[in-house]
Amino acid sequence: MSKASIDEAYLDVSAVVQERILDGFDRGTIEWAADEDVMFAAEMGAEDKLPVPMVRWATVSRKGKERDTEGAMDLPSTTEFGVLVGEAVSVSIGWSDLQLRYAAEFANSLRARVFTELGYRSSAGIAHNRMLAKMGSTLHKPNQQTVLRASQVSAFMHSLELSKIPSMGGKFGSVVESALDARNAGDVLVYSLDQLTLKLGKERAEHLYRVCQGVDDSEVVDRNEPQSLLTAKNFGRFPVRDMAHLERWLSMNGMDLWMRVVEEWEANKRWPRSLGVNYTTVGCKTRSKTVGFPLRHLQSAQTSPDAVVNAARACLVQIASAGHASSSGASSLMATNAQAGGPGLFPLAGFSLQAKGFQRDMASAS
Image (cartoon, rainbow, N blue to C red; front, side, top):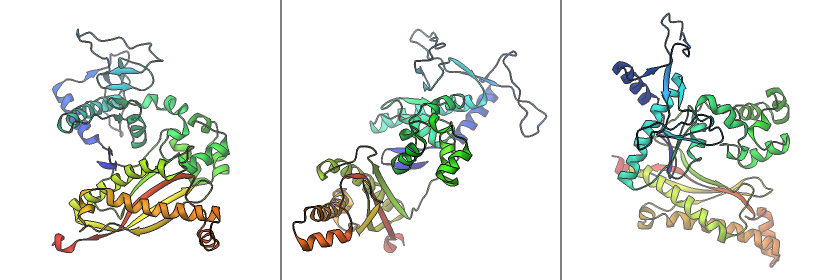
């Protein structure tokens, strides 16, 4: 498991799925495709060939009869394993789909436990890589799961807006849209990799080319002792223009960061020394300011996120005030100082809060 935020995590269930497939194979519960449909595959040079499994996705009604999902191309196919993206089928063929069906069973049981034990509804995305699973988890909130089969990835990505692809929001997404006149992944893929390299450079072109095809090789890694913790919010095309509208996001992100810091303390007895506030004003490069992180021995820092939120708010208010003084020219001294520090805070395209400089409490550790 790799925790992504206050309410989101990635799980690599490959080992669980493999165990269940082997168990099903031993017990004879896996169905095999009919002879006329079978495609045999020799893997890793082995002489033995593996038959292809049949995967049933049909939703079972209360009367115990399967609902016919064939031909419903324009409607999402809702099955007992989740919503199938793309072509609506009741049966598919292949080891890849069988893996996803077992993974979907696992996700269903996990979501049921979350609701039973914690009272929270949840959504899930089931796919063959992190990026696709992430996007799938957002499609049918708040209480459903989505399965993205390998055969449907190409069609799914083709019409997907760039802003909905992880890593394609913010500045990089804007650069791609402007340079390529592209609004979705399909618009990008009309260019060859060589053409993209000429426009964007080798590294960015290769990244863009891969994500627009739904390719992601990143692993699910449990990082036990991070050097820093970061929570961020990008406002995209709708920048925030005053502190009143920023307050909601500041509270949410402050709580997210505080909860993760508390978890780090409980797990590893480490507490940060510094709070970094990074902010991007529209038309400007990202800038940052560092202040002290609330001390752990303060009761407020241990029991409530308010201390973190207040520290971040005070920092941002100071930045916004400096920019206002510069623009208003109310005082020549204030204006001079503010101008030296650069533009103010608003309109704000995005911000992040970062806990860093972790120190271990040696007394507690010993």
